[in-house]
Length: 515
Image 1 (cartoon, rainbow, N blue to C red):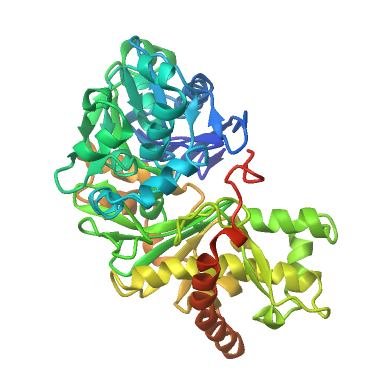
Image 2: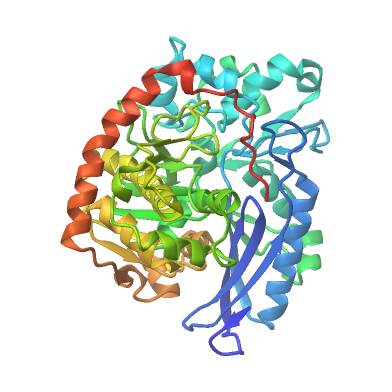
């Protein structure tokens, strides 16, 4: 897809966003609104209960295909660099020849639930979270490594190197075995103070430090190998900026860079994040903290249940006319607060703020008078309240002044009004179509010396983005209703978590995500 003029400028920078269900390569024109986007999709596989894996070769093929197509569309423009964003928390085991022995074990894979719970209950728990900034959760490569050491010891013994998705993509493009600070900060294995691998975490993982790649700054620049450059139609050693994780780069790509500005994204899942100048640890363990650059870190939390909760509602209630919009139209007829109906939207194994994937969802306060519209609105409100718990925790880090929201759900007035009302802060909905790819490209300009800061890189590629967005209006009645809901939620969550086994299921029982 090409936007603006059909003719590219003399120079472009490419943002490569390798996500969970697809790769997006975007060429951004320098000094021009021209851009070209290519998307290549691939499946998320579930070979066992709670397992969510992908074929590394399939992902690399999608990356190469997307890059080749976007370079062709750039029609001879000089490519200043390719800057890489990838999904976080993945794990691949490689043999002596650096070929995969395992599939990519994605962030959504919950096989290590028992190992994560054991780590959370151990004497090391607080120190591990404080050192790494990564919650003790099945998504964490640390927990996955413990699982492999216990359940696949023969396979683990054959592994020469344990890498993430970013590391594998960099190896394919540049021939260099390395990771970067952002990906490392999401592994559970990093010491954010020393910016090196944490010996205690490595020991608990059951591996050796020499099985982990060296850690580069996110602004480090490598070069395309000759064979890859020829395949893509680029010059050998074309700069490849190692980049960061998709979450931190998503904040950059939506313009949520200033103190107190939260970047909120809701797609299938959701997240709320804020940029801070140095690593921050939440004493209550509710938040993660991942690197964007050496002096810009992103603190926040992710929820597994975002827009997918409406898909669930449509599946069990009927679509009311053929699509989500028709179902949401029913929710629009119900007052804020859903007449007392509350949903805890733990349909998939949940993450922030409780980081307990065994908790199941619930509809609380159900009465005979409640309708499909009430249930749908309660679903949206439940997701919004879950996000509010993260924003509320962020407020203790730096007072939250505003929220920049992006994601397909915000095409719906119901989603806009509910989220703005529940968060009780000014909410501006931004386009954010390029998201992490735009963030990667902006970081890339800084890395190759064409920008003086992250903000400058973003402003060059998307002038005015940080000041744009449709501000959502919320009525006084809705504000009052959601203020009452916010007062109830902490007690409800605390009680729900405290009753333990009554509301827990083994992770993997009905918790799969399918792409």
